[in-house]
Image 1 (cartoon, rainbow, N blue to C red):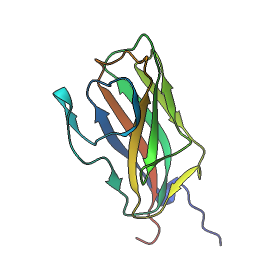
Image 2 (image 1 turned 30 degrees about the vertical axis):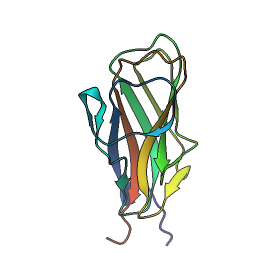
Image 3 (image 1 turned 120 degrees about the vertical axis):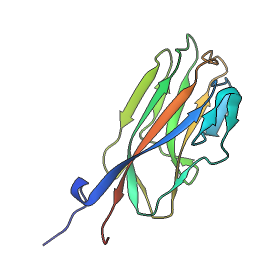
Image 4 (image 1 turned 60 degrees about the vertical axis):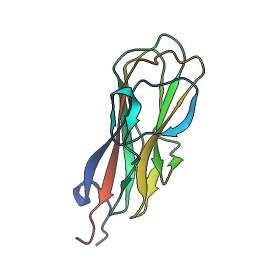
Length: 142
């Protein structure tokens, strides 16, 4: 009998990241797990995974829409942005993306995070951002 990794052998978890007043001209900025008004950020920008797993989706919500520029959002594994799933936001206040299974896998002990890049013409600078990274962790052996 062959055992395959599927949802019944794992657990879907959601991890939240945020930034207050998303500034223009940011490049690959790791988002903290908590932030308060006026940009007082928590210094923690990731979650350590006790099990191996994979990133399966990402979503973002802005408190206000921009009228110009682009904001890209992506999940990270040990500080390196995954190629998929990613978001490119222009004038919307919300976006989401999923990726095929086995696209963004990680080992136990990996740090899962999220990062953003905002172009120089991004004018959504009064908008607050919330990002959720969805991961499936493998619970084999417990």
